[in-house]
Image (cartoon, rainbow, N blue to C red; front, side):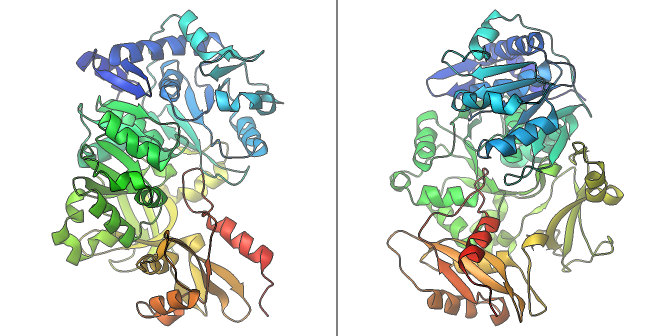
Length: 519
């Protein structure tokens, strides 16, 4: 099986003078993009990249990010995109862990060069990716590319390591997930048909490329010979404007992004008619929020993906047909869809044995999309990949038609008075209240019940309600033991991870820091 760089060869053959990349005022045809990748690969080799060596990337989204992903592999190496929202100490720990040959820093992060390479003997060169003059001691990306000769594709493929992605955004002990060329090619094969990716695709990349969903989509769009469009980061107004400016056909979002776009006045003036497919995932999607977005963009098809970094990432999909009004009564819109073509998905009990339809347990998966393991963590790898199955840490169940329902993360499940409370179920009910913009449900220590159900909500602009009214709203719709015993109406924005997920751990820590323990 060919490697990920095969997508560039194919794009160059089929569409040499068509646009491959748009980044603001810059654009590159497939011919020029391929030439820049081959030259950058030569520059990486001349600056010390060895076969199988790591190229560490710390930058906002741009055409240079895409070039770095492919040039690292073209040169025979591995790309390691890091979360730019981490502290310097957390980033330095990950640099030391992966021992890169090269570090590529965007202009916004050039000042961190000394801290990141301190004590890391493997680093042979630091490159600044930007238009300005590189600081002393750093190479200029564009100068290095211009001076380099294009080199042949190293032909990495199969089980060769392609990408090292660190899973945690909140700890220096994050795990490096090893994903191969086969892993990402399997993900493309699993998703390209349902997403409708083709040569006519114009895909917007606004999500951070250190997140697997955004990184994997780079490869899928390239495989389809579509056009990549970049924004440095997600800003609702900028995303809406770029969709209109570039005629974006495909984009992917997480729930917090839906909320931000719906709250932006720019969306009220357009239905964004060029958008053909919107995929969403990464975090539980409240049904009310999805309905609101579907009403705002009636011309788009909606597709949900479920998975995780260790699965490259998709193992189930809820296709656009399951989002049609006539399917609403079936209840499948609350599911994560059915297994993709080349993934086996099951639900196991505590004894690691499969459960029957309707029984909740841990979701597990196996197939060509499953990671090679955790970098330098053999014990953690063995635990996660027990008996050849990737144990996701998610709780769910299958229905009789093969639809998977994800009910919670194991770590987020609340046990109150001996009863299991799934935070996602409570969040979905809270989101149905007309005043609620965002919500997060978590367990707090309780001397009698073990844990009590607590909710943090933000309200829509101009809306008003009370904790008592929200609790009453829940009590009308779910069992009383599942209802929040306390609710905080938060005026500040929700704390978000680098992938725009609500950080429940931060909300819990903040609450415990200002609230005396119950007695």
